[in-house]
Amino acid sequence: MSWAAHAKSELAAGREVTVRPYGGSMHPKVKSGAEVDLVPISDPSTLKVGDIVLVRVSGSDYLHLVSAADANRVQISNNRGRVNGWVPRAKVFGIAVAVRN
Image (cartoon, rainbow, N blue to C red; front, side, top):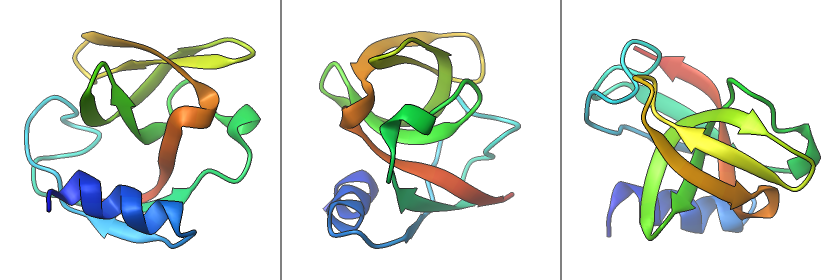
């Protein structure tokens, strides 16, 4: 099971989860291999630009930034300017509450 699948399962059950994603797309906000604590989204309307979230966009799971938002959806991007796309707010699995780089 991938780290994202495990995290989504825990978040769906209402539990906090710690993940350790690898890659450079979120550097320096999240360095490769950093520990990131995620909690379930209790109120999707509170998601805002700059939040780091676990989300599925176009068939791929990402720990990326909310880069834009409107009333019903959020735009997801990495920290290097690449936009992944828009998703309904209700489709965001979890939000980062701590990053230990």
